Image (cartoon, rainbow, N blue to C red; front, side, top):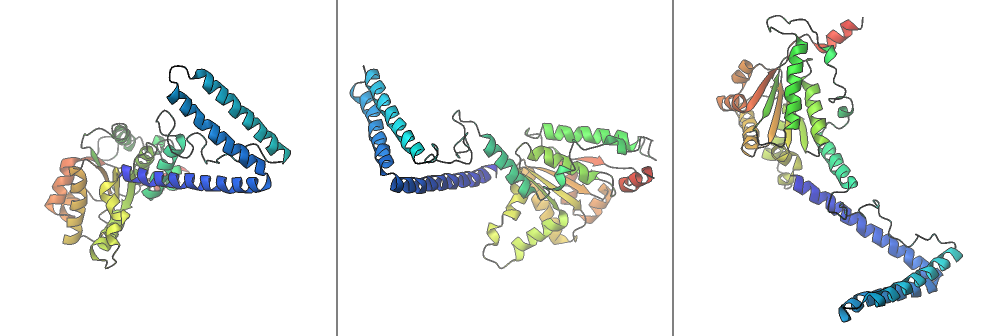
Length: 332
């Protein structure tokens, strides 16, 4: 998936270079019409530059002096050109190629072979755009996560406070991000009632991995089934070119939010199993967030889905008071 997206972006870079060269040629044409002498000088520089290669080929043992002479000639021609440009109120760099990124000249790569910062940023931007949650991640991430909003009193029958539990869950999530590239078959199951921080932590993980140039797709279970149904039942001829569907299987991380809100039947059970199982078999990682307990998951879904979730996912229980209500009460 990453390679395909990289190739798409590199095609964009190729178009940028073509456009930059076209615009340069248009500027050259304009200048040549105004100052024909500059065209002659450019042609002479081009012809003279060819002599450098000839000097090396024809006299490989003693070509340094010839090359020095040729370079002095070229420098003299460039000085004449600069004088003519200045005399005609034309900027000295007017005939240069105007690349968007001067560091890599719109190739995406530096001379040492490393990715240019502009290509890295473009990959990140592309991943963010595809993730479906670009805007919210500016507010919900590990940097804005506040452990102090979780109560520190032992909660009912859980044997620990919501804050202690969240510190444990937070450590698992940070480890998940740090070890993401390891082939450890680690997937996460967040379960618990609403308002306990499941979605916030999903967003934290998503942003951390997007910033590492990973492809993260965040969709509700309901939306996923809409995407699947479009693929299965649409009569449109281009339905097999639907990137939304392919990304469910190919993204580095798929976050399935609100599992259990979609209509549960044989079809949805099969499709959920297909997505989760295919990703497990291809070592693609998945996070499932749900308000259902493991018992309720087993009642709503087939045994195959339930056993696969328990076998390959780390279950993390969220408990405590609804944080939305708790923060409102605390502010009173």
